[in-house]
Amino acid sequence: MYHWLIADLSGFLLSAPLLPPISDLAIQPCFWPVLLSMLLNITAFYLMALDKARARTRKRRVPERVFFLLALAGATPGVLAGMYVFRHKTRHRSFFLGVPVILFVQILAFVCFVIR
Image 1 (cartoon, rainbow, N blue to C red):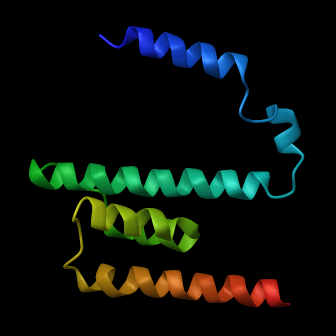
Image 2: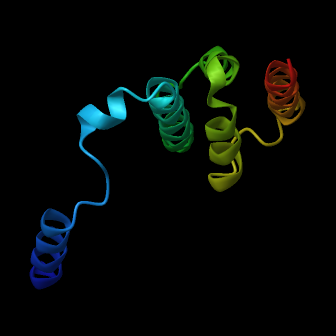
C-alpha cells in the first residue's frame, strides 16, 4: 500500500546522506561511548516492554536485577522511559525510588567530572 513512499524515502536517503561516513564518525572521541549508551538505553527500553508483555501472559519474566544493572551501567533513561511508557514497575518502591536515585547520582557524578 505504501510501497511508493518507501521507494521515495530510500531514493532520498541514498541520494542525500544525512551522516558522514562511519569511518569519519569512528575517529571522534565521543562516538563509542555515545553509541554504547544508545544501545544500552534501547536494550533497557525493549526489555521493559518484553517484561510487561510476559507479565500479561504469565510467562517467564526478566529479573529485576537486570533492570538495576542496566540502570547502573548508564541506561537509566531507557529504564525510566520504559517504566512510564508501558506503565510497568511504577508501583514497586524499589523502582519508583531507586531508579531516579541512580539517575540523580549519575548526573551528579557527570557534573563533578565536567567541573574538574
